[in-house]
Amino acid sequence: MRKEQFICPYTVYDSIDELEPQDAELVRKAHEATHNSYAPYSKFHVGAAVRMANGEIVTGNNIENAAYPSGLCAERVALFAAQAQYPGMAVETLAVVAHSETKLIVEPAAPCGACRQVMVEVEQISKRPLRVICQGETGPIMVFDGIESLVPFVFRNTLL
Image 1 (tube, one colour):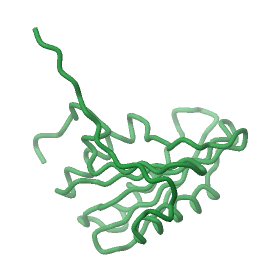
Image 2: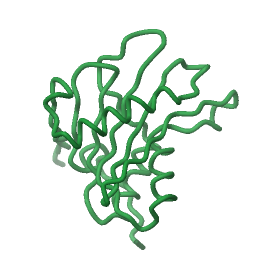
Image 3: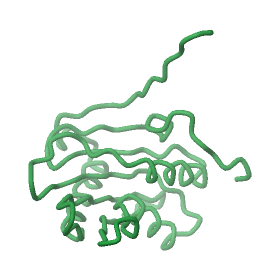
Image 4: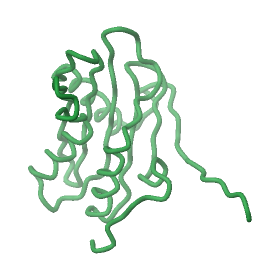
């Protein structure tokens, strides 16, 4: 028997001003997307912005539903919209942020497990690492240089 450890590498920025201009723009677009969120139940508004290989940006926001499983996360809305609008185009970077009506979110908003699994597939289709940028309403920004930093032991479709 042996004990092993998974290491999750990422970079932390103290403010949006420290980011490269392209990344700062993506985070700002994600913040703007929170205003389109429909979150009457959780009061937790999430916005996402995806940068495609051609430089285009596609945004998404969370949509809740009284039948809770029928809602959809901002990350998946943005990624699915990006794939629908730019079929075959690689996805380079995804930014996700969150705002709450009940408290100030200062810690980075991490994608849920279902969104992470979709990111695995998007990265596989794109044939390049998917950078993921996370921020709350304010506070530090975490940047992951590939989905394996967020999902240990990824489940991949070996047919792609």
